[in-house]
Length: 160
Image (tube, rainbow, N blue to C red; front, side):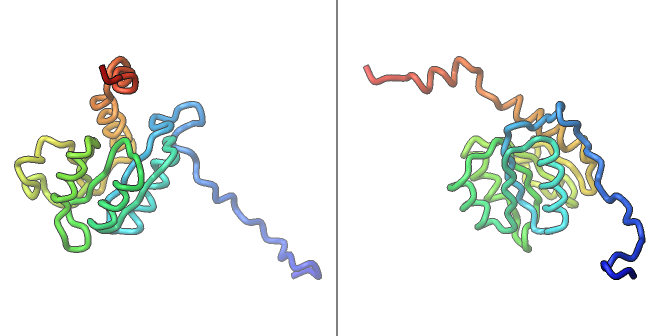
């Protein structure tokens, strides 16, 4: 070690390559609610979603936290694990559905663990393919987007 404290060793560049180039952000300006109690997976999802252009990622680790987040944030789409801290997520799925937020299940559980009323929802098994997850979220947003005219009508609707 020199007098300046440098060892002379070169540190490798540990930058992670971007999955999505700066000009191709499929989730640009979107916000995503993550319902996942595994903090490592939740962090990985948040990184992936941010890299895909999300303006906001709202991670939650309990059913109660999801309901609170829904009252404080506007989200475009949600990712739900089936079991959160030993509680089924299905009451939350009903609340998310009632709020008009499209969602998918991302879980290690089998499809038959999901109640019949939710089996038509997009379903991905862990471990998942990151690109496939992004595509599924984009599809959900596109399928559930109100036509521009409907949005304008809602904003300009005046009492007669």
